[in-house]
Amino acid sequence: MCRIVNFNINGCNYKLPIVGGTYYEKAINISKLRENTGFITFDPGFKNTGIVKSSISFIDGEKGILLYRGYPIEQIIKKCSFIETSYLLLNGELPNTAQLKSFSERIKEFNSINKDIHQILDKSPVFYHPMEMLSSLTCILTAFITKKDGLKEKDMYIHLLAKLPILAALTYRKKIGLPPSTSDKNLYYTSNILKMFFSVPKKYYKNDPIITDALDKLLILHADHEQNCSTTTVRLLGSAHTGLFASVSAGISALWGRLHGGANQAVIEMLENILKCGGNIRKWVERAKNKKDPFRLMGFGHRIYKNFDPRAKIVKEVAENIISELEIDDPILELAKELEEIAIQDPYFMEKKLYPNIDFYSGIIYQAIGIPKEMFTVMFALGRLPGWMAHWKEVRLNREPIGRPRQIYIGYKKRNID
Ligand code: ACO
Image 1 (cartoon, rainbow, N blue to C red):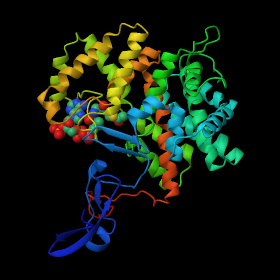
Image 2 (cartoon, protein in one colour; image 1 turned 30 degrees about the vertical axis):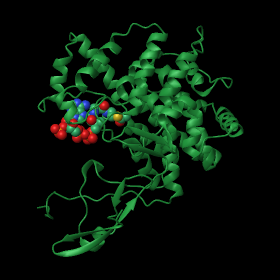
Image 3 (cartoon, rainbow, N blue to C red; image 1 turned 120 degrees about the vertical axis):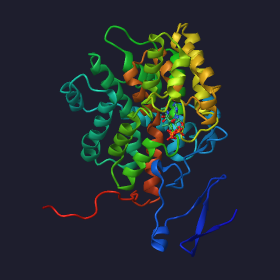
């Protein structure tokens, strides 16, 4: 591969170095472009801009490959738990038995929450969206934990892994008028999440391995996805030396958007609406193609994947499995499969390389587990947490400069107030 590109602006020749990675991704390093030429680059949505050299995850969008620290997602899903995956993302290697035991035990050590946080929830109006509450409570953990206890950096990651599920469960239970639940140190991480969500005074949620396994797999599939919108948000905050909890809180808010993680809620709402309106799938596919119509097929399309999303393949299998294991008759799953069949054969979707993404089937699993729609993106956030933290850590370890793009100003020229 050549190491330099030559280019010409206004008759002057310039040389720009090429940056390469482990695979074939290559970039033109333009960090000195403005200094040397007076030009900046223009790339709305960062569609063609690399902002970092990272060693956490790798995606080949054309071939449908996703690696966490070098391991294919298909192997991780078969051989690792969510806690092992979190360790891998945060530390770079899979844990040995002793490391895993100590990591899991430390998470359990921190799994309680300051009682004043309950009061914040008690004073909040119940019509909040769980994502806004989760983001706020995550941010305020800074006051309750970091400042109070003078927390060491390595403990912050453990604290957040322990605390986010507690905050998620509290947020959910408060909203539907249930008392707070306590976490159970004897349970595995994901079983404990389910227990905290669903145990009510009289009815203890049974620790069903089929449900735990399905949720664990979803958490793993969401755990990291290189420079997506929420992770880049977390990285940007990290680059300004904002603390971990506040940075993750911003990541949660970014994830909430319906074009990003919020799509999982939007997909089920769309499918329910299609069903309610008579189930004429072709009509909705036509609407999605019509540029004058704001309707889009939620759960379809991806900035990076242009062949298939490997996570979507796995999620579809998990969804089919859990629906059949739990003997649920779900017309939404059938509708989703039909919609996928029709859309992927449609010339518009083929030409634009639009395929189902991870969010297309994930909501069906959450629904089968009994998680309400408004909590879907919260579950995504629980899964994405180790990825966000690994990226925040990488920014700090690499001593990356503060993220600060430029702009092309198109407003008024200088003018005076009369
Ligand atoms: N339905 C119909 N048309 C679509 C869809 C869709 N879901 N997605 C993209 N297109 C079309 C666009 O209209 C555009 O057409 P044009 O070239 O004629 O203007 C073309 O495909 C390219 O789409 P962009 O929006 O430019 O692609 P971008 O990479 O910016 O956006 C995104 C990707 C946001 C995921 C988009 O595909 C989308 O809105 N999908 C639906 C929401 C969704 O499922 N989001 C979850 C993504 S996965 C995740 O974040 C966890």
